[in-house]
Image (cartoon, rainbow, N blue to C red; front, side, top):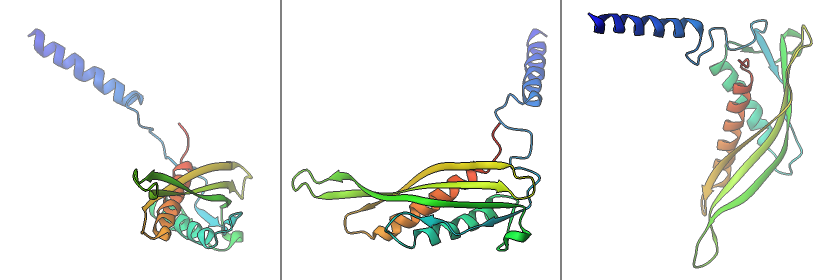
Length: 167
């Protein structure tokens, strides 16, 4: 009899924790509800490496459409909100070297960017000059462009993650 009461009490306590929100999950909508459309302006680039700004803009549009409830619109006048930003730098770092020759074995290509997300109707800034960093790795002899695509896609994912409301 005592065991049945203990199980009932533990079940009720777990239910209270879940209902009260102590389970680690937010109970609301994870994105600003007053936004339905997003215009993503072409990212600028301070880097001498060209093309990454186009890839980041395209990857971000795809991520927003796939991961959020928002629709991408190309015309700023039809958008509820606007995202724009800049690639501040693209750098390469040697991660591993051959112990005998000292030549690089594995490298990293890092993309440092900053972005702003603004509600065009209310003027509210959801993100203001928020910095992100992402990277892709490649081995000696592999295409650096592949590491660049990985880094750009990770940057787009981080921007979309930053679009969620903080809780």
